[in-house]
Image 1 (tube, helix red, strand yellow):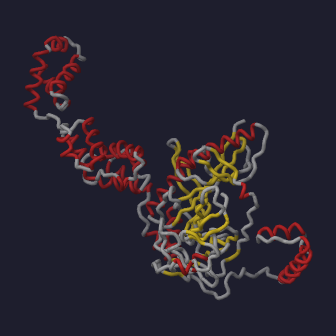
Image 2 (image 1 turned 180 degrees about the horizontal axis):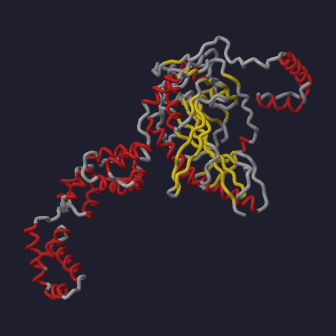
Image 3 (image 1 turned 180 degrees about the vertical axis):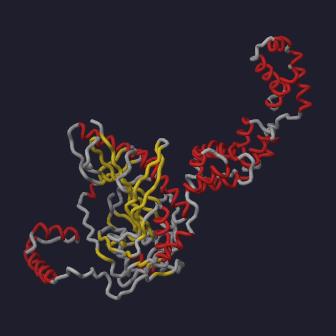
Length: 94
Length: 476
């Protein structure tokens, strides 16, 4: 079982607020997922190169040519809040 | 106790490609907000990045110029963190396979050469720009024009031993990137950014002390000042028996201090993993060789060539080649000119002085290279005295006019006509018999007085060299 400390740490990385009454349930489910993925640890991968991409392709690149960007109204159409052509967000303190 | 300072720098340089790193949007500073953006820049679902070939080429150029090994195999990775200027919640970067590694930069400290190692150079994308309102406003605005702009991050080894060395390193690096024409390198506009890690340790100790990371230094001077401040702060804390807290601190330019950035207190855990939307970058030796062949002349080579071709001192050449702009200006002036040393003196002296005083860039100066050539000619031909030349220079700076006409406008043309000067000198001698006697009796300093009288008689326009010569002729 994942311990409480790790659970809180992962929750903070993911910016999740856990309700205290849900913590045990989440901890159980989280552990199930980890156990499932953990099955991979049973494999012997001593002589296996890490697999980074599955399609075997490389060097997919494009030329440095400007194409028209998206029109701003469309670009920002789904933004919950906007102002002066920008997306408005909660104040970020430096 | 005596301490030794250890500094390492992380430099981010925006590449001056036409388009962004992973989409065809324009890479432009200062555009109308959110007009150079597309779904890739905004991290919209389903949008897929495609790497700009030029980004790889530019990064490899930087690597070769800095003596790095170029990785034949590299890939991109996701660096995960939440911040409003990063819409995907990850930055495409490179983790364990940087495009370039193990390079070095030569700097000169007090006339001694020293190499600063370069650990790695990798490619990554820039984030958007947060615009903060006034304190009473409870929001920030985000402009994503910068989102996806290509960067190279250049990480140095902890080889730097003083704030001055850090500055020299950055100046040299900036010069090289400018020569390569792969980045604008404008610290004020943020196209060249520098973070510094600093720690101190008792002299002789092997282990590093606890380091702090300093951000927000927007000029060469700020980098040096911030590190000097932080160096002293470390010394003070340790000498009072305290301990340094490992943290990120922000340089406050106005107050001249570093301040802890409380928001960054949380441990960094970026959970890097290979970017599944992009495929590996596999380079061939031939391709790298091709780039190498096309590398432009770099500062150190140019410096040697200036000494060789123009016969100027090595010191002059080192100053003149620090930036590409200045070296080009000098060369345009000096090419085919018979007095390159005089041109070097003007460029290193008056040109740099006026740029610094007026906070101008070379391209904004109204003094054209041909004007400076002409100015040196006028002095060499005796038309203008060296003090007169400085006046003409000031006026050229103000009006952008060519020097020859300014000489007459300012009434600075020297009398170099020997006949006229002989008359003038004869008159002065007849009026100053006493000094003539003194001179003939061995009081050589009487000559200086007579030269002065002649200059006065010529209303300051007599050519002092000619006056000197004629005086001596007539007195002998």
